[in-house]
Image 1 (cartoon, helix red, strand yellow):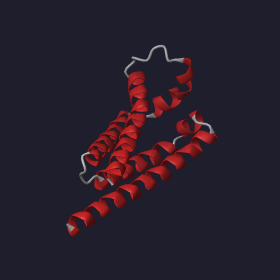
Image 2 (tube, rainbow, N blue to C red; image 1 turned 45 degrees about the horizontal axis):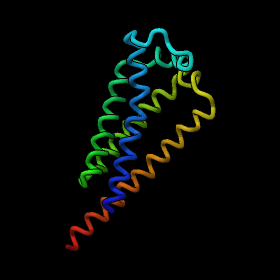
Image 3 (spheres, rainbow, N blue to C red; image 1 turned 30 degrees about the horizontal axis):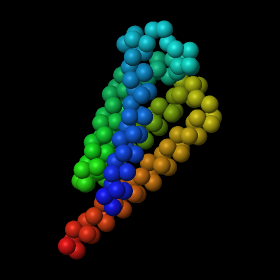
Length: 143
């Protein structure tokens, strides 16, 4: 189970980094550091304009929770609560952002469907973390 814990930690950590990229891009744009905006990112401008700083702050906190959960998984410590907290806050923030016209404008229908796949995968990862932590507690109790 140690290898599975480390693999889950790497997956969660990689997703945190993946999730950090749009936060940084949006913050750079808002701060005027992304000037001129690269052509391949120009379609994001309506969403970046519509995204409030508080949303970026909450999203950053979610990334910090995921990084902490990943670190705890790799170190063999309990991480499910942190992970579920991050998933819950991220899902609420996604719902808030997803409801905006700007979000619907910048993404294609296929990209919007990918959001649901990401939500499904986060649920599968949560179940895997629960299973790994449950089996770890059972092994400790048996010893």
